[in-house]
Length: 103
Image (tube, rainbow, N blue to C red; front, side, top):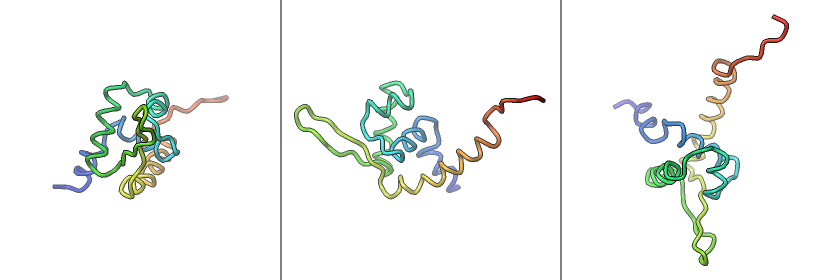
């Protein structure tokens, strides 16, 4: 199988990439990730589980009472940050609508 197809199977949809983006920005808590991405709660929970199972994200307990977890990128997840930067640059150049001024 193609390595691009393999990568897309793990992280190739909107919510997963936005989760990685937020973690790369240092946003670690579920509610903050949800607010910043706009992901539905159940969808976000599923994506975080999938990313954790794939070794892209690590979950760490920061409070026992009540039990609360935070999420961090693993080295594999950090390896996606340059890919996201390239995707952002491409999007700015080719996908983001331009505001026309004086044309």
